[in-house]
Image 1 (cartoon, rainbow, N blue to C red):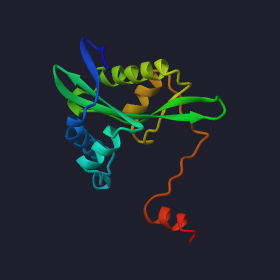
Image 2: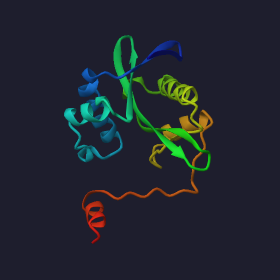
Image 3: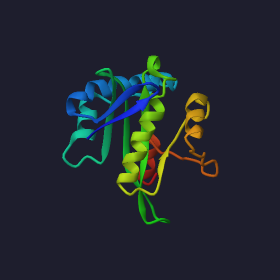
Image 4: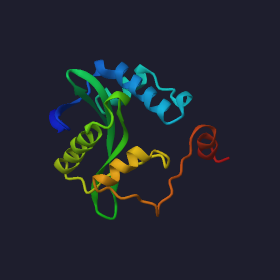
Length: 169
């Protein structure tokens, strides 16, 4: 599915990613990790991206954002579920717009595409996380009406800690 939205005075095109986009998606992931000051944290490979996003039973979706036929960013999202509402939500894992295209309305346009997908899928919510120092993103999110969920604290088990806990140690 393709979408075209106005971003400033230019049209941003959003399309569902194809398996041939996997190398570009990984490049965007690496650039996002660099921006988020974690360049060494990315261990994913093109094969990992292909398997996660394009397998027959994939539960994650990727979009590619294009401007003048050039790929300028991506989003990865999936459905979550609210037991309180009894409905799915859309959770945005990553949104990235290349630096030279920022502050031109493309981030807002990309969020609108995702919000439209959430509404079309009858999702009750559209949620994501942001690093607390990423003020340009926070400013954008608040400008579109999103509210921080400061009453919640996220937790993560990964790596050796995850394996130890799963093993009952």
